[in-house]
Image (cartoon, rainbow, N blue to C red; front, side):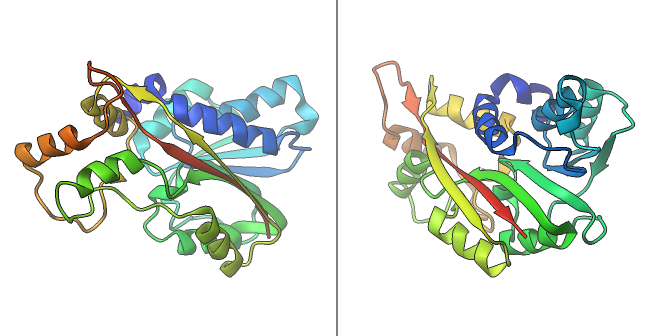
Length: 253
């Protein structure tokens, strides 16, 4: 199950989360914080630590939300019962929260899996209080460019999701009414022992939606092997590199 092995392979999520936390600190006693797509609780655990170390900067109430119940259960097991914690199994695209009820929304590498990002962002804006803040990381357009290129040499089907560029993301945020908008981008280049190793990590991270939506083409062993042969190798042992472009966004209502 992805939730059980998530932490062991989630170095990329932790790296992106650290960048996000640099923008979040200090929280300044910001009231109600929603950790949207909390996974196994990396961001939520940071806020709980603030309760002990710097209580005046900690949120009064923290909502850990994830669509995957096993992920949420791991977060609860890790962080425990706490009066300031609420665990909510729900869909980011249909948030079951009252309008203007949340002071901050934080989300680490989760929003890119939403089918309709603009709708999702409008829903987030709807639950944020006036002058509320949304801070999130998401994958950029060059993410998995090596995998996309390898598949492009095999057939004309879309095998990997297309992610928004920083310019496209800025336009979506503007349309949904966020202002001001601060965006930055950074690329990570982790190495894998093989293409199979890369694919296995994507699966373990729960990123099954890395496969393009709407592609009903059945991938055969032959076409898979052709893609693997087309993927650029780093050495004779078959090690490969994958690009992950991570965009960090800080926006206000």
